[in-house]
Structure formats: structure tokens, C-alpha cells
Amino acid sequence: MNSYVEVTVILGTILNGSVWLTSAWLCRRPVRLRRILMLCPLAPLAACLCWFDDAIWVCALIELISVLTVFSFGLQAAAFAWGLRFLLEFGLMKLWRGSLVHFQLFLPASCWQWTIAAGVLLMWDFILQRKLGQGLAETAFLYPVTLQAGDCELALSGYLDSGNSAVIEGRPLIFCTREIKGRLNWDPVQPLPVETVAGVRDVSAISASLQIQGGCVQPVWLAFSEALDGCGYDTLLNVTLFTGHR
Image (cartoon, rainbow, N blue to C red; front, side):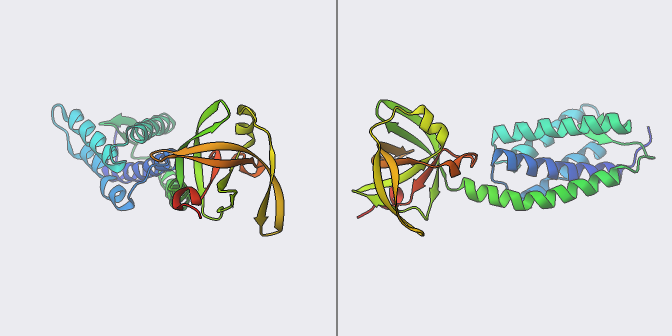
């Protein structure tokens, strides 16, 4: 099969970048764009230049080092990225009757559809850059916490809300999803006056304790909010859990 080397390098480079950014976004793994740009072309270039005995092992080593370096040796994200890359390559190989050599996709010289695929992938990369930054910003404020209410203890993910600083009777007020509400053994509910932008209103809450990973156990008031359902975390934390309160 006749194939253009430059097509393999260009498409392989774009495909690597797209897969790495996608995996970083889905796995919420921080990555450096400069590192991605530097490592994207290495594996496609090696596949086109290395044509000696056992060259496949050299290419495999370059592939492995590149993906591990991009994700700072985060094995979950690296494995996901590698699997996604090969899945896409096998699909394109079958669609355009190409071949997979040294872990890279070589297309027939007559195949022009790769230009459309490259354009779509570049557009996807542009969209991901924005989403990745937003997703990682949210992840930076996620903390593993342990919540205890009555005789029930749950391991949850908590999101730090800098706008929530309500402290009632010496206890910070936090909010949980309705799903967590169904998993707890309820203590007697108490109406608590909470000051909001719309004025003072009563919030039904229960007494509980919370421990942020690496911190001490703190008493809290626990209320529930439907607005948290589907947000990607279990509880909305109170800023005074980190800064203390008077």
C-alpha cells in the first residue's frame, strides 16, 4: 500500500493531542498544553523513521513514555487515553482501508478524507481547552469528606463554596443532595434561621459531624437541597470549615 509519510505524522499528531485532551477532561487530570504539543509528534515520527529489526518495541516504548509523561504518571488517565487512541485508529483503519504499523495509522495515498477528520479533531481540541480549564477549576475545590449523622457514616465528595459561610449556634451549615438524604438515618429536624440574599428564612437541618480528609472532625448542621442534584459532588461545604469561625 502506498502511503504519504506526512499524512501519517500530521494525523497521528492531531489524534494524540485530541485523545490526551479528551482523557484529561473525562478523568479530571491536570495536563500542560506545552507538554502535549512537544510530545504529540514523537510517536508518529518514530513510526515513520524506525524501520529496523525490533523497531516496534522502540515505538511502543516511545508511546508509553509519552502518554505517562503527559499525565504525570497518572495510570488511569494514561490507560484510558491509550485505549481510546487505538479504538479510534482501528475504526479509521477499517473505514478507509488503511493499516496499523508501529501503532500508527497509515492511510492509502488516495485517501483525502483524513483532512476532514483532522479538521473535526482540531475543532474538538479548541472546545476541550475551554471545558478542561473549567472542569479542573471545579476539581481544585473538591475534597473527600466523611459525614456522620446518627449511626450512619458516609464517604462523600465535597465542593467548597466560598459564598457559604453561615454559622448557626457555633456550627457551620452545609448542604447535601437528596440522594444522601435517603441514605441517612435522620435525627430530629430543627428549623434554623439562615440569612440569604432574599432575607432570613428557615432551613430544616439535622445535627451531624464532618471530617475533611487530613483534618479533624467538626460538628455541622446538615440541610438538603434539590439544586445540588446532578452537580457531580455530594455535599456543598462551608468556607468556615477551612478558615475557622468566631
